[in-house]
Amino acid sequence: VAGHKARFCRYNTTQRWADSLASFRLRFKEPTFPYVLPGAIGTNPFRDDSRPWHNVSISSINMLALSTVFLALAATAFGQDLNGNDTTNGTLPIRGDYIWKPTCKLPSPKDFMFNMGFDFRDGCVKGTGNLEAFVMFVDFPDAKDEDPDSLKALHDKLVPPTVDWYTKSSYNKLKLNIKADTSQYYRMPKAASEYDWLGRGAGFWRHDRYIQDALDAFTAEGTRPPPAKVDVLYVIPTSQAANYISRSITYYDPVSTRQGKRVAKKTVTLGAADWDLIAMTMVHETGHAFCLPDYYSFESYAGFYTGGFGVMSQTEGMAPDYFAWDKYRLGWIEDKAVDCVLEAGSTKHVLNPLAVDGGKKAVVIAGSEISALVAEVRTANGLDKNLCAPGVLLTEVGTRTAPGSGPIRVLDATPGSLGCVGNLDDKNDAALSLTLEGSNSLAYKPVSSFDVPDWDVTVTLLSVEDSKYTIRVDRQTSVKTDSW
Image (cartoon, rainbow, N blue to C red; front, side):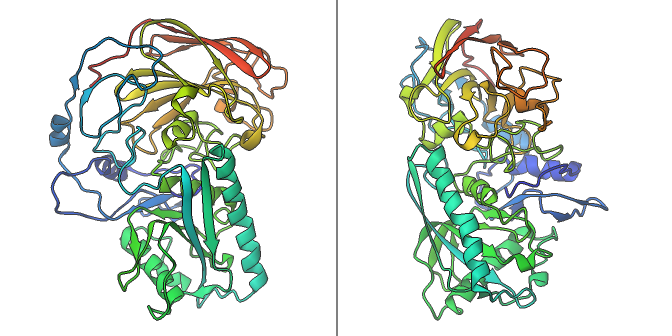
């Protein structure tokens, strides 16, 4: 779901109902319908004011009565001896197999379009190796841009920083091979105003037509060859169209030309406003190509669940690097870099900062088939160079929590602190620490131990030596095998 301007995004009961239903996949083939998660920066049809929105286009999310869904998803527990620090515990998640042998690699519920588990859906772009992508630039009859210097500047502003960002975040495990046609802006057949980008009705069809028109412009309506088949196609408009194309969207279905030539698995269309035409928006939207959901709140301010952590929440956040959980899911963190805690007891773990390659990166405490706690170390280095309060960050993952409702949540060890000087989001100083030296936290004192509500788990930071953070996990109960 697009972009970063999610502040104060609100929508009514009708939309929330649609969002809830859209989390489930129907087991029948028909009927199908286009669905767009709430969100464009512009007019909200459910309100008489203008609020920021963001969205994803999905061509075929199917509905089923909720009662049928819940009956179909009844889980069966499978009992066995647990091996506390075995990351996989001999089990790989299998979508639809609800006989669950506990593991810290939580499976993905098969009825969730945007999941938080380890079983990615078919069509998601792979998180390791080479990601092949192509960029085309477009303008419009009512928003012309014939300045080659502006096109080159726009390319340099967006593409190289995005490539560099993913190289760093993935520890060189992912390479974005982005080719771009910088010869010209390809003229769209319709005026920017005619695409009605700010409107809400028939959003999928509007988005689909926009992409098809861009491909028509590039191929001269099929008389020239289209781009070679890629993982991700980026369609980037001139900033001259900012009054009309002012939100960024990721299109989840494969895209072909109107002549039937397959072009891309996923398509990212950036908006033309200043907040869209920045590299971090391109980084965010690329995350959706991996099928990562949005972490910002659909009903409150963007950092409600995660503070300034994570680019899938805030592109302007102080610590935008991916959470350890997502790096683990994408294959950037290997099993050997993760400690898995399944059993009751007390265990010690030594963690290294997430920003630096090597060493232990996370402790995962599986609560059930659908929930986990994760401990990771965030420091003011690398992509998190603007972090205001370093330490051990605790997050809670829910694989059955919908986008916009906090599928990943930062646990605040210093609630009520108001965050950091100059960066007043209360969760920005959420990490456990032994000292406030080198921190801009407004907390009265450092907090080194945290009792996780409703988890019977306490995490304590014991020492910090040479960027090695030693923590103790005290767990009173073992992982649940009959969680839901």
